[in-house]
Image 1 (cartoon, rainbow, N blue to C red):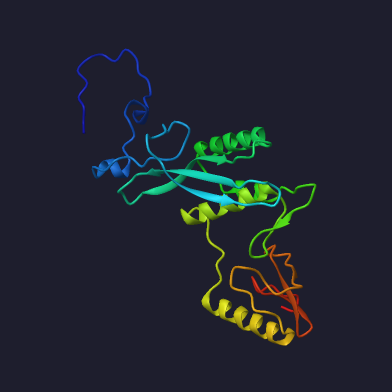
Image 2 (image 1 turned 135 degrees about the horizontal axis):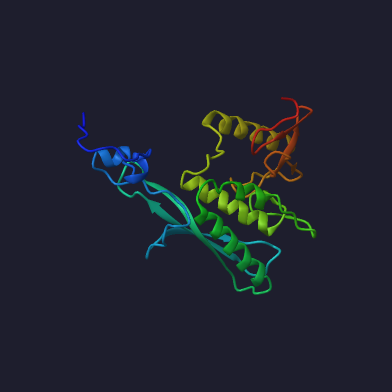
Length: 231
């Protein structure tokens, strides 16, 4: 548009118009609301959705109950997503109350910062107890109670879509079931119900940390993840 100047010019300055008016996003241009992102400015809603996980460790007399609450961003829009907002750990055992409170506050602060919080999983799972770890139900090795909390967080992030799952496909599951049946038949072992454990004498797998490695045809093979030194 042409503007006719009718007065004498006494001075001038360069003005960035984008700083003098609010930015219009693509969604605003079409009449939709702005996309809300997770950051510290986001206020806690009155109600959050969450899940509670039970941890029963031989290191504790009483079970731990881990609750992760999520905030739902952009509900009802194509940008809807569920993100962790806070975490609580409850137990009758008060011996470790201080470090549990500290851990939950730090993790909750990381959640509210926004961005990628999935790194917490590997950081927690890498914590080792100097007294030694333990085997949980199913033969999965846990190096510490903190590592199991990391495992719980991993399960939760997979459930809400922030991490990809590690489930085997049907062909792999069928192959491992056949291998397990063949091994138990050759050893005369008592069949163990799925999820209860693996054949007696199985060794710990370095890949999936499950006590499921057996010798088959002269090769160490994991009956849980399929890892084998023979390829």
